Length: 209
Image (cartoon, rainbow, N blue to C red):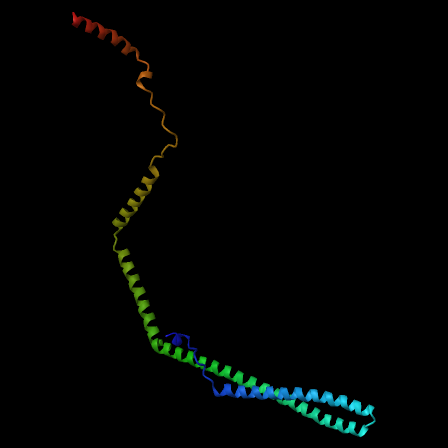
């Protein structure tokens, strides 16, 4: 089970990938050859100097001719490396262009399927049905608005006026608090009440006799 989930997905190698790989391998080999020739030319140049110091001019001249030929090979090697690198870049860019074209093709097919699912005739039909629905609703609104008589219109306006007037005539609630009510013991008796109290005492005494 663990091997199934940890298995890496294999990448498909195309012919273009193999071609790019071979070109890069050839480029690397030419660079190695170029490096080896450069070192050899430096050694031969130093050897030619030593031969001249030793008075062996003919050998030094022959060695310099050989060096000149190798210099020409070195220039050709540099041109070949440039050509190989340019070829690799062209192939890689062509692969990118191919992927772009494939993406455009997929997008074009998607647009075609969407256009087939919703044609121009369907869009025009939906727009017509929507416009008909709007006009039908407008006719219903006009019929409902015209069904009220002048008397109904006056009654509606009168009711609106009454509601508005009722909201305007409502008394305002005072913000101040109400005064405290005094207790009965603290109230002063009125003059009439003071005369009635002795009279009630006399009547109670007569009834007791």
